Length: 224
Image (cartoon, helix red, strand yellow):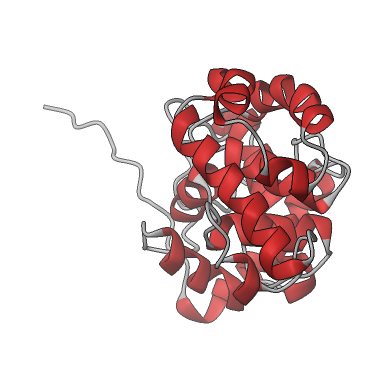
């Protein structure tokens, strides 16, 4: 009986991982020259608020909610003094709105109390704010302050990093630790945007479009 040949997964030698990572970066830069955050924001405070809302929610939905949110609560002071009921009503469609309301009001209070109402530009200060973890801090630092302190690892970045053989980890913190040494520091913020763009448009979770992927000839998970 004739057996169907099994496609062997490509292997990336440890000595070649550095040059491979740079090739991935180069190709994605050419493919997505417009890669950037999809959250519509103009200030660090707006970006911080929107990123908190984006947990378990699409950027598209967040962008539908934030115009009214930013108009109603334009400063840390107004956010600190917000009526929970009013804030909940505005952000309700983003999901988990009670927890997010608590985080946003707590954020406003912490900014007023400890930072004169301004968003701090350091990792240590940001992660001490209510509702702000390392991922959110990386988003704000990289996009609002142009500071590359780390790599944002969301579901897309985590999934693609595994598929591309850039990590064997699934924990976001460990994935980030694996990615940072492989890429130039000045590209850390951009890297996340590139992987997110590619994850949404081509390398999606259920049915990756390997046949049109610019990485298909070097990706160890490619089906073509």
